Image 1: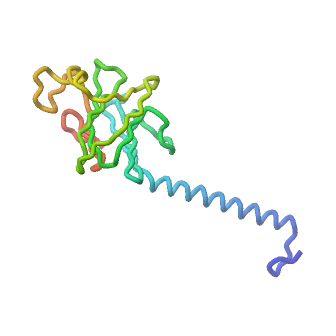
Image 2 (image 1 turned 30 degrees about the horizontal axis):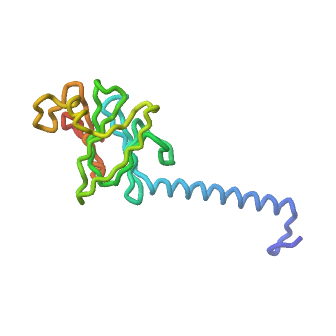
Image 3 (image 1 turned 90 degrees about the vertical axis):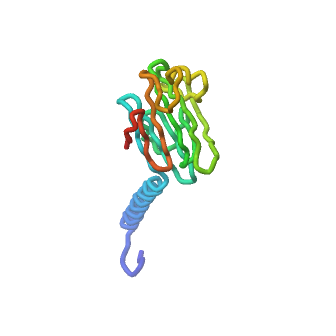
Length: 174
């Protein structure tokens, strides 16, 4: 059979098709990785070896905050916090509340303070909403300042928009 001015046999046509399909598949995989890379910005903030969170900023003003270091390319199915890329939060860890992260809303610049906790108590860490009940556990009696937490409490003061977090000593975490 003559194709494109040269002699092409069925075997060589099969080889050409296989090469084309292989290159196309490699190109699609590379495109997928580029698109995934453009749709995310992940930062890990750790207070200690076992007190880490992942802040995963995505396109469309979506942000996922996941306990631990989260590497998967798909959004988490449970045990995460979903918010905007401009949210400002404080995440508390207390020795008196083992394996729990208390989430306190600090607002966002435009006045909306939307976030959703998708917690799963069966997971290693549980996300809980800040309340007066937790204030008594986290803060010293007669606390007047934000940093007047008990010695058994640690926290991440998280500014998602500006991409940084501070611990209770005021040290910036990167």
